Image (tube, rainbow, N blue to C red; front, top):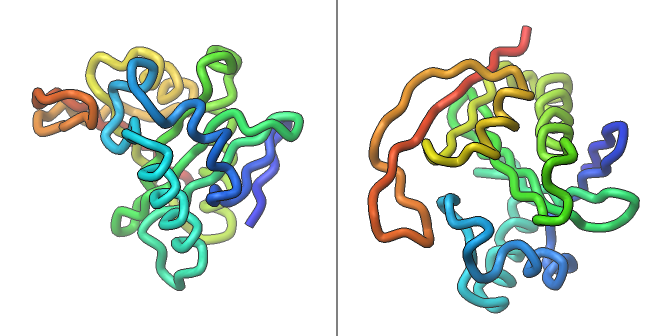
Length: 171
């Protein structure tokens, strides 16, 4: 599976991307408002990448994780989780590539592809209520605010956080 946008190519995220994924997914600080990241070690990341690659082989995957490539360089990832009839989007972009619209472009590419070829019409995104960067991506995607609720547990935080839910319906 390969998704092309005007500036990006999205391909399945596999263990082949271990070193380039580790740049943004191992350690903390720059992705501390995420549920599944950061990973604590390259070994933990490798196991995750193997699991992500295996999902592409399943008839009904739980999620699909795509490496985001810009001019052939791996700059981040976008994920589509299958939540019933909806697709939930998530993304991570390397620090030096942020603020250039890549996250929104990659997520939009996934929306268009899965709406066109798989008939998914409802897409959601959730973010930590303090994550301004993700909220800006969500706004660029034209998503509508649904609610704020408790119960969010970010991987690098011991405290429970508030989470905002957004949705977009494709016609």
